[in-house]
Length: 213
Ligand code: FES
Image (cartoon, rainbow, N blue to C red; front, side):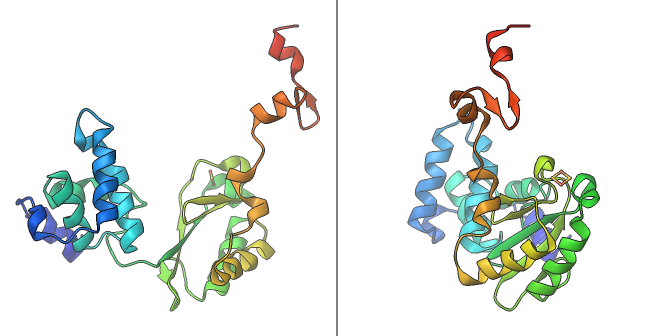
């Protein structure tokens, strides 16, 4: 447990909003999220994620800001954050690459892609480059159908080749879109294909749509 986590564990007081400088944009966002749930604590995870995006990691300052707006103790927030792998309780980069090295991705060459990422970023697994790129290997990200894949600032890209790894890092450094042709969110979805004529790839699925044998 880090020093920060240890300190938070024993901190009981809820920071007062008047004492904490919370960026207006973050405060509004947290208040909107809390209003979506009958119990405001249900919004802890997205609110912590918003603070992490703003600060680059869940610094004590970031946690205090969320705690003050949510009227919860920092200890409570840290206890949630430590349970989830995507919360960073130590300083990390402004840009994040999570390379999946779990079984499906590993069988499809993830280790070689990871090695190339390490070379291109200039750090080993878990490191942050001088220009703020945080690279780490990750367990299954739930997108095995595009294995081997990575999450870049939350955007899923795959299937990745070793050459893609170089391009991915170059795209981050250029400040543009990262591998747009391989972004999962840009893929046509089944509904679109369905409406386009009942074909998914080589398969005609129109019979199953109508229930015909
Ligand atoms: S094993 Fe990589 S996304 Fe599932």
